[in-house]
Image 1 (cartoon, one colour):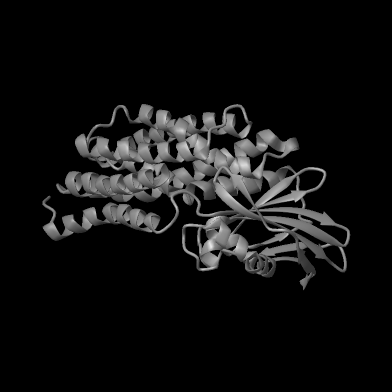
Image 2: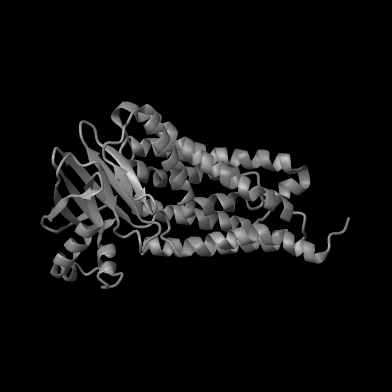
Length: 366
């Protein structure tokens, strides 16, 4: 049966629009997780001490000094930075804000770059039970605040826009650990646009298999590719999270961007090539695993539930990957019915992905 040309055009628009949307959305955000703030919280009987570390660029943008931080200018405006952080980071007792007294502002180096560090002492009427953070989030939708709660064992949580409060007396335990790390794993993949675009580049040509052998065969081969990627990133994720093999984030992020470009170029040169993609997924998965491990290294693994936390984080990543594949594979298979699929979806989408990967690569190298 002949398909009208207008219908064929609509057929190819779905996956191509997905690729365009991902690339355009990713281009407006930081390549991985946006800016990161660190909060180290030590709860006391009638107060708390919080050490805040915020990226220098965030402080510079808040003071309207531009995106290239001038540390001397920031030091000269340390009173404004203190006021900003004290007003945004609150410690509360039953919704009653504790009195905050800032300490000395200093600057420190982290793997992600230069940070402004400010200790803040909070005096409360009783033992505080809530932390609330309103800094940076209004200006950076991808901002994360990694909170380390000090006690008998360090427990860490991540705050994101829309979830900017934390109960300081929240119960722990195995179930809470598994739940939290599954969520963090899923979010780490979903918000890691470079990982998402890499998977999309790997499966963008799955429509050829669907057209030749049927949707079930395409689903099976795509599942193998995703599983191969999981095997690769799981190995290095565990090695990095346990501190056995740790690589600096800069080169890792650049290699992740390069992996996106290379897979997209394979699609452009040989759009129907499929056989080696599982091995490509394993190879580049090893690199992506070091990227996935960054959040685990920031959070720290709970001493009593290390294995459970690692498994839960991997499960969260896998669930998010499979959900993404399920989202895009059906329209890809449908688009493959059109004669425009090769050039519009596979090559056109891969060109957009290659451009985005190249921009990330240049940004991360220089």
